[in-house]
Length: 88
Length: 88
DNA sequence: TAGATATTTAGAATAATATCTAAATGATTG
DNA sequence: CAATCATTTAGATATTATTCTAAATATCTA
Image (cartoon, rainbow over all chains, first blue to last red; front, side, top):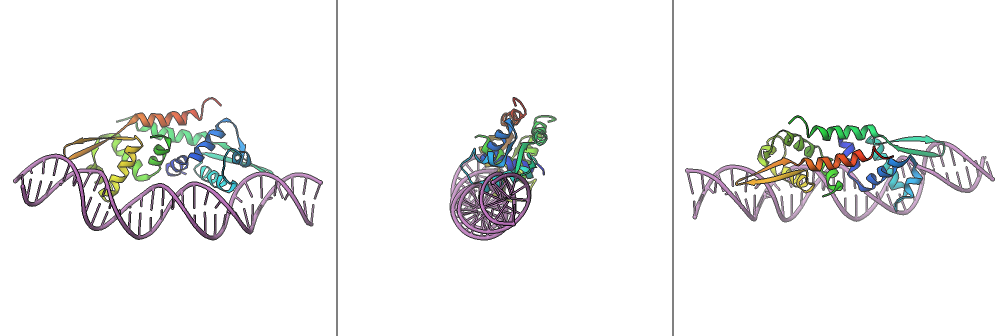
């Protein structure tokens, strides 16, 4: 996990939409899939990229896997961006 | 120019390094090239992606083209990220 | 103006990414 | 325990990205 993975993860529109969904509430993979016109396999792939970047956390509860936003990584990215403005 | 282009631009390590260089001072394309082990053509390509994303601005002065950071786009990205934390 | 310098553009090769279908895994339930 | 449900993994294909070399463009200078 580093900026490489984070920015790559955020560079895809489907993944940004997933993040926007998770901003409101945690969701299972299936609920997320229902918001898109894409196969579950594709969304699963996107979720694994988001997870690998640390942007989401998964929480397996029996049959379901809940996904939720991990804001600490969001804050790390913001810090990197903020550092571009400071200390010229 | 949108988040698509911005995040894609930031997802490449060479382009992030270029941004870090430009954080300190504006530079000509040639000066930027000197910081990398890559052809001028490749760096030029990266610069065009950064420019297309609005992250840098170019300023042609005779023989040289100066590149400089455009912080307003950096701030837009930060706002998008900040909105993930607010208004749950 | 001819040659040199700075930078970009074109075209090609290779690698990475997104998406699909089909199959596998793991958990629940009748 | 067999069938079903939720999700992921594997393998294939098409698109996009990165990088290179070679050539083009634009500007400066001797």
